[in-house]
Structures are given as C-alpha cells and as structure tokens.
Length: 189
Picture 1: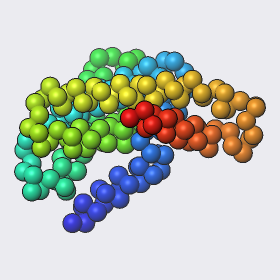
Picture 2: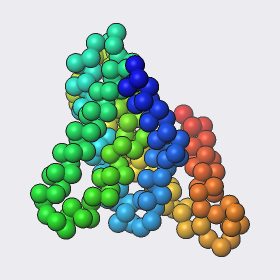
Picture 3: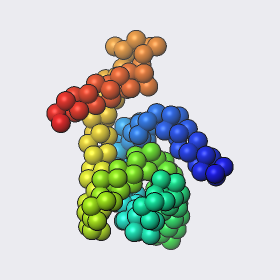
Picture 4: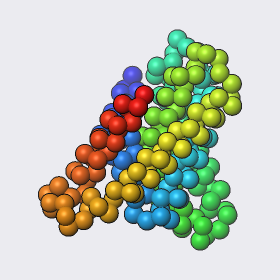
C-alpha cells in the first residue's frame, strides 16, 4: 500500500509541479522550430508505443484489480520504453544521442504520456478494443499534443514581449493563454 501511495504522490507532484499535462514540456518545444518538431515527435512516439503497452497491460490485468495495478503497469510500460528508446538512440550514433537525449528525458514521464495511457485505456478497456484502436488512440493523443504545441508556439513570442507587464510575462501569461484556448476548444465539443 505504501508503494502505491508513493507512486500516486509522485504522479500528483509531476502533475502539479510540471504545470499540468505537459505544459512545461510545451515551453521547451516553444523555444524553436527544431525543439518543437523533436519534442512533439518524441511525445508522439511515447503516446503511441505506450498505448500499445497499455493494451498489453489491460489484457494482463483483470478488471477487479484495475485501479492500482494499472498504475503500476503503465509506469513499468513507460519505464521500459524510456530505457529502450535511450538505448536505441545511443546505438544509432553519438551525435543523434546528444541531440535527442534531452527530448527523451522530458517526454517519457510527462503527464501527457501517462494521461494518454489512462485516457485510452479508460475509453477502450471495457469495449474489448483491438490493438489498432489503442494505437490510434495513442497517435491521436500525440497529434493533439502537436496541435497544442503549435498554439503555444504561435503565442510564445508575443506573450513574452516587452508589451506584457514584467510580473505577468512568461509562465503566468502562458497559463492564462492555455486556459482561454482550453475553454474555447471545450466549447466546440
């Protein structure tokens, strides 16, 4: 029970201190176009491959043990993907490893990735969905992250300009901007 409480505390801290659903990762992505492309590509990889892992986890864990066991299972899936991706990139060349290492680190345990696993699983678990539906859910989440990153990049320079009061510049203005965009997108539902 203590392990589960610790994991929940870590996830809550990640959710709170990384400013909810990948916002801090989006700030890294907003720095430049190369950062945007690389970060969103790595996030999409983790959401897609992680959804495949969620499919396997959902098949292995009975519904009665779903709540706590799935949390541990999804954490293991992301941890294994993280290690495998680092190893693959390392053996693909030192220059590529130096380029992508930071993107892998900030993307693997991002709340957007773990949230995708729970969202896809929650939506598809009881319906007996196929592996392709899980994969599509992961790709869909990665595409959503790309769109969110694009919206942030569009506003990044303007919200950090001299026209914005210094006390509101940067993170506070980004959160207000993201809140307004979220409400607008929610209204389209």
